[in-house]
Image (cartoon, rainbow over all chains, first blue to last red; front, side):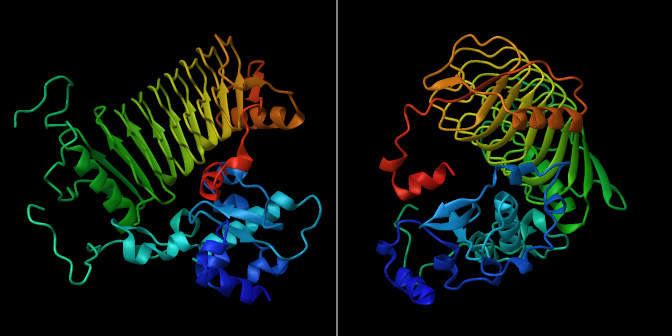
Length: 151
Length: 263
């Protein structure tokens, strides 16, 4: 049923109040359903500085009645469907988010290939050795469109 | 066009026009993963091109920029983990829109340093101008001197810590994150803030609309002690805590897109 809901959202964007990562990608990811896929995420290693840095502001939220973490890089929620152990709410939210970002599944990251205007690591500051994108940006051309005279 | 003469060391027209020379200077001395270059005779564009070339294309993780000359918009748009040292001062909009770098500025910074910073650490040895940390989303911004007016305006996350005082309307429309002010705060502190925490070690001239004293918790103590320990700032003073009174809260009336802006 969840798959149907996602499809419905994609075809009728007016039906959605919020934006979910599933809506943007058209699918659900394993780390949204299985806690074992995020247990190995090292939060300290994933952030600059000597403490959690920006992850300190990331907490578990609720979207559409479902536990979720907000992905600021795509302005969307990553919903979490597995049972979250009591006392680990924020830790789990942070691990799911880092997994989402380092996997390259965040919609903001997926847009980089086509739209990054200057060289930058595709997977941002979270993954060492990430390939560089944005080295050959070209302005988009709308077929058949011509600039008004004087422009 | 004749060069402006109002600021020393700036030998080009810095009035917001695009500097035409887009060639990467490639003048750095590179030693393993470290690099160093002298920015004295380079334009803003050339300095930023050199930084990006080193970090994004040469695999350099530690860069020292000599003689930054308080030029504007240096070190912006760096989106990876690295260390950068500016051996001098920065002008306006230094280190804006960064995500990951750990930056050390040995001098002062002008207006709007670290505007829209996403993550990373910036330590400024001197003072910083107005609008420092504007719309900041995350990371730590440590200023060992004083800060100007409207510090952290529209702040959406992260920590701004100053060992000195701040000007008026600090924390205006703050939406999340923390500010630690070791000395005095000017008029209108935290005006129209939605959320977040402001700690003040000195006197507050006046509180802004809907900014009220908050209840101190163990989490506040842990946070303050941790930041002072990490950045070797000595013993923290006794702080007052200020938060949003939530009298102006109208979240239910916000559009979905507006609601996301404050998350």
